Length: 85
Figure 1: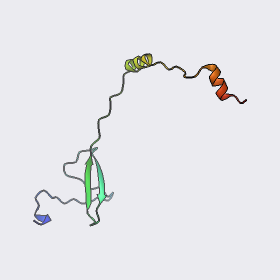
Figure 2 (figure 1 turned 30 degrees about the vertical axis):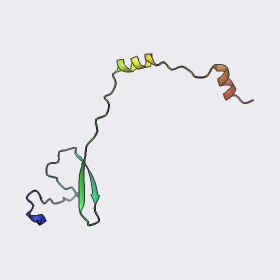
Figure 3 (figure 1 turned 90 degrees about the horizontal axis):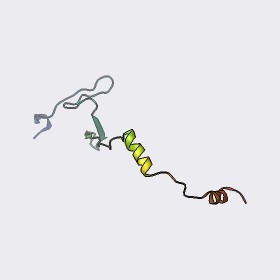
Figure 4 (figure 1 turned 180 degrees about the vertical axis):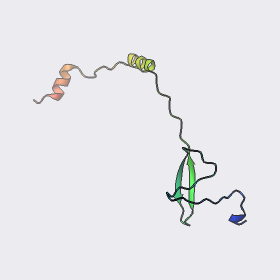
């Protein structure tokens, strides 16, 4: 089958700013563009992974209460490590 006989293939033209409209693309879609050795471009739509939801202020405070910051060194040990003899 020849490429121009493919009914799903469409032709688009770049505008003055080198933009090319893609059929089926939505505003905000992100694509990876690679140029192959034969000079053809391949676009792959990138899908953003959903990250963890932000913690609420109450959750942050509860985490801080459950894991208080405590110094690992005593004052004397700290003095010895930070003072010149």
